[in-house]
Image 1 (cartoon, rainbow, N blue to C red):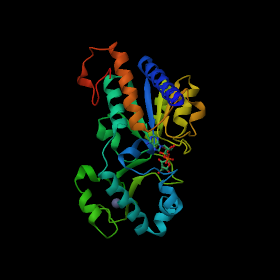
Image 2 (cartoon, helix red, strand yellow):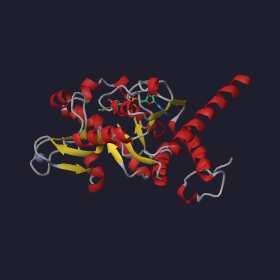
Image 3 (cartoon, rainbow, N blue to C red):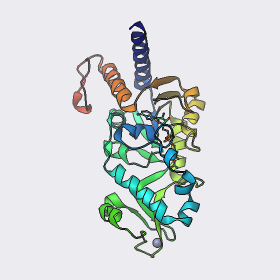
Image 4 (cartoon, rainbow, N blue to C red):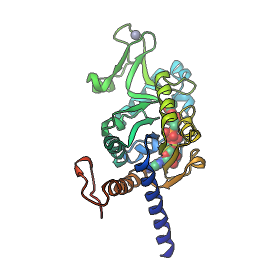
Amino acid sequence: MGRIFKVSRSANNMLEEAARLLVKSRFAIAFTGAGISAESGVPTFRGFNGLWKKHRPEELATPEAFEKDPHLVWSFYKWRMDLIRKAKPNPAHYALAELEGIGILKAVVTQNVDDLHREAGSRNVVELHGNIFRVRCTSCSYKENLKESGRLEAFLAERDLPKCPRCGSLLRPDVVWFGEPLPRKALEEAFKLAETADLVLVIGTSGVVYPAAYVPQIVKEHGGKVIEVNTERSGITPIADVFIRGRAGEVMEGLMEKVRVMLNGGGGFSDRLFRGRGWGD
Ligand code: OAD
Ligand code: ZN
């Protein structure tokens, strides 16, 4: 009993400290990975039940794999597209959108391709690894966002390999595969944000895939604070000023309650901005 109290009290202290750092920050950014979408039902890559436990990345997420067996690679990506299109943002995604709305968070830098940040209402989203709903031509410059063009359903139902409507070549997912460079503009933007930020909120990433994982390190090197939310320790934990162990959705809900109370001085702040639970309970 005593132990449970102690653990929860220390978790509470961590939340307090994280909320205090966030509220007094001048330029906070978030850095997210697959773990933030786990509670939305999107499988992570590593760890228990991770995607890379069931499939070998070199068979599915490399340019060589696509060259060798485009049918296999496309069936994997269509399966993920279908799964992700049914997924809904969870309280962690909403919390980040809310923090941006309040003016605390300036951007979300994400390794995720699932679009859930934007769906939750985040505006300034930097996607380092592409977007699963976008396809691009392997020959010409054709690109299409299937969600925006309204073709997603038909695309998923089609059994033949997808071809470019402009030149007839094979289409591929507009995501970054192993061994491929990251989109230059997004990477530059992410690094610039990291250099400017005085705080980074790192949520649900193993922090082992580079160059993305440089983002929190750059913030730290420039004197910024690192707050991490993860169910496990990660490659980022050694540089974290505050590590909050727990599920992203649950932790972020608790954190937002603290932030609201702090902004609010305990009551009276317009609750128009805020989604979800009230404060003070
Ligand atoms: P990983 O699958 O490597 O890591 C997911 C992290 O989320 C782990 O550290 C888990 O402990 C944590 N986690 C799981 N469930 C969680 C929850 N409910 N709340 C909080 N944390 C949770 O995913 P990423 O770090 O995003 O790249 O992987 C990085 C990149 O590797 C991906 O973008 C992808 C992959 O290969 C490409 O596709 C290029
Ligand atoms: Zn083309």
